[in-house]
Length: 337
Image 1 (spheres, rainbow, N blue to C red):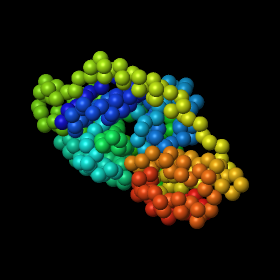
Image 2 (cartoon, rainbow, N blue to C red; image 1 turned 90 degrees about the vertical axis):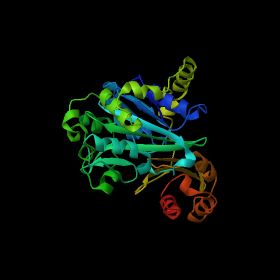
Image 3 (cartoon, rainbow, N blue to C red; image 1 turned 180 degrees about the vertical axis):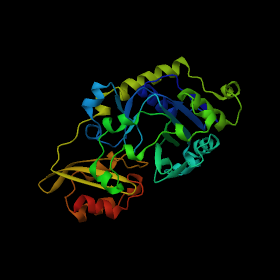
Image 4 (tube, one colour; image 1 turned 45 degrees about the vertical axis):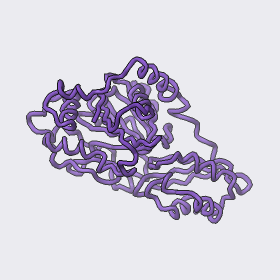
């Protein structure tokens, strides 16, 4: 397995690097990336950024805001957090199987003393019932990309301040705040690792995943970015991750809002209905899917706003490829009820 330890602390550059490597057919798979960043919020591909973050707080505290290519929910990260990303051949892993994908990370954590670490729910890694890692996944061009967070020593006070938590998600999980659901890893590490930095934590994980005893040996498997790589990464960063339209976009005008939290994610549909027909529809949420949900939005535009007509459209597509794990009938009921 090749690895790349990013030297940048800018989430936008790091996500651009991920995207570049995902699209580069010359990269030998599998590959794992690690990166650390200054305070930032990364919203999922399908989320409404304006409604997921506290814009004023992020602006005043210089919290960078950007959007990633994968689904899932918004994440707050700072220098106490370590990100990891796996790029694999899509045929070698089932989409949405986070447990298998993150097994090398979980096994390494067990070796470092976090013996209670386990994958739960659809995409979380927890210890003592508290989340320290959220994960997201997407598939493009025959490759599957899975990235996640590892909260070593994150300032948890900032998580709730930077992020808005939708009320329906709070109620559905029976929680009072984001803070009560998360924990840092440091207290769970073995005594010999209690004072490690985030960079030292990264290097330990690299060595354990590669099965080597020192970083000098590990570096033989490190991918080196070339000047051409860096030039193309900078272009992707400017085009997408620094781009206001990509990060925030424009919420459509709508006459109807339908929102529901399912076990496999939240769907927030904004529908503009004119003369009894869907003129515009936009899906937001933290759901996952192998296909771009915009394809489904296009298919629904112009359809009569009725349960029968919506059901007819959905019967002709693989709904699971847009909203993984959410039954089509429940989506129909959400939109038309």
